[in-house]
Length: 576
Image (cartoon, rainbow, N blue to C red; front, side):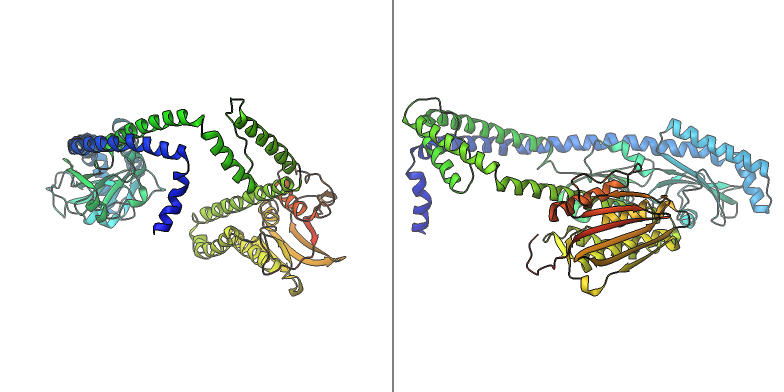
């Protein structure tokens, strides 16, 4: 231990600058820390108390605003439930009669009432539903948004028969207010009840009432601690995390017009005024310490700093890290030494920058830029396909298998390591990609992969074929109402590897776009077919030279992309 301490302190002991700088820093920093800590500890209690009071006042204001909304919705529902047209419609339904004129009048009435409610209360008023005694939705202002728990709305208990009440549960992450409708002239009873009226609140828009709070701090819950609405929509419907309640300062307030609870999770000890006070104390301490350190540095640097900087830069130069020493204003021997070092560094750096090492860095940067484009571009398109399929019940059942394919694709594309993979591995990636598209296009897409076993071990740049297959799908199959096919063939011609990707298309024959064998970019198609091909072509030229690349043939009814590259076997220990 003594030997280790001695070796750590020897560099400091041997330099006057370090010793003086540390001494002056400690003489300033220690008293400042004592004063600031004492002030912070004595004032923290008072500040926490004040911060808690402010949080309580803020919650009261938010609760008051939301209570006004709850009351306004209930007030709007009561006259609607007693409307004679609505009751007449319920009597017709009960008798099994249909009066188209009456139903049209009721529809117009409810749409008008909903519009009025949104104007008076706010655009977070969602939809209006009329529920019959058989749990059937007789009317909805938005047929696309249906009630998920119609039976639950019918079975929910009421404290007062004729008064609207807020449901203690969410329906499709929406808060809902419900009122019973009784037959005209009848006393409230289970037999005289003919229907129920429901108005929902849009949870996403309701969040505008408590935007002042940080995410994950403000909640509206029911009596059972279930979250009715919150800043994060994925928390709606779940129980409020008990760990949060134990670790945070919990401020609660009950609603005046429902069984809801307004919950604010605050932590004045680490935030709010206490945090500002702590930051202020730390800032003052650091500012004073920094000021003394700067003064000390300015005084000492004219004597010791130039030599120390020169020593440090010379050691860096041994590691091929070349930097110039600046700030030399004198003309003494030290300045002459520093200027000579600068001249040497400039000449050395110039030679390195204009030689082989600089060229390698440029080529590596180009390769990385191309690969950075391909990965996120493919992932975005695939996730877009999954999103589209989720809207179709028939296609949605295939989403788990799609996600499994996507997981394998994504794992392959982001796995660090080699820039090259076996052709068999790359072709398996393509097969999964095409399988994903088969779920989307169904019988409109067929494909064939012809990969002889003798070519499976050939090394190819990672993610080389995906942009080509993507072009075949997007600019070929997708534009054909009847669909088409994609064929991938691997063969050898004159001791070089040829990969052909042919797909059905609307392009007329006779046009040929060439990428291999020249230094120019692949000519862009007017509709954008060149972007992916140009990137693939650039990668092939960077890896193998301008002799190799892509040729694109537009034939009658088909498009053929032809990849030409050398045959190289992937070594097990090859680095990317």
